[in-house]
Length: 280
Image (cartoon, rainbow, N blue to C red; front, top):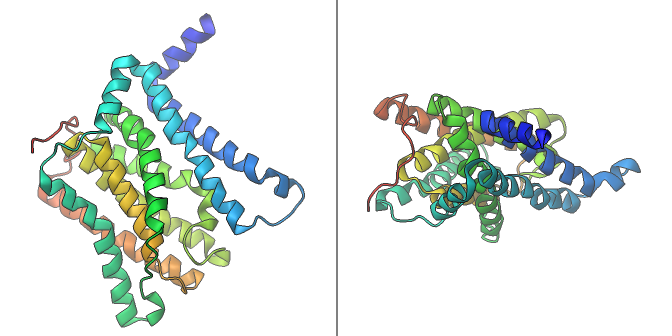
């Protein structure tokens, strides 16, 4: 009984920290369990097996988001989360935010194709949207549905979003060498990972902004799905590892410029107010 009370107290005092510890543990241990037989035999991990780590990792944010919401906020909190995952009664202008990832990616890739090399010509792989939907709808149960509201409580909303973005990017560590098209990334692994984290941190701020303005977890899920899906659909298939790290870095700069524009227009506290649904 005493241990149960200690766990409940820890969750009530540090809900975001508990979420991150549990989510990373479930996701990373699950990924490791999948590839452990090959690692223990000192065998290379095939790309398909590496990609299969990702759906296993999705169990972390999705299950922990639901479980910790129930433990921390009770049935009412869980019902509220499920309601936010169905909420689309927002002003139509907020759906335009979903266009940011594809427009930004195409602008970067087309500029690089024109000014640098035809190698940067965007791909068109529509099946990739399915990958985005799976990732977006599973992950945001935890990242937006639970972690961001807890992390934002008593803190600057923008700083909370940036911190969440950095942790979200780091969460991808086990599968980062299987993301993108120029895999494995070899000597450019570090540069690619830094560019990836920079882009994902900016995207996380945009996801949090959309959530803060609409109160809709579903819209956050959709923006995540579009972001991930477009990376799969549009990523140029013949770039080298160095070229891929470069275009991700430029894409990150574009996203951060969009964030800075929002700060300039709305002020640094544009994420501080509690998320409230906006009328149609």
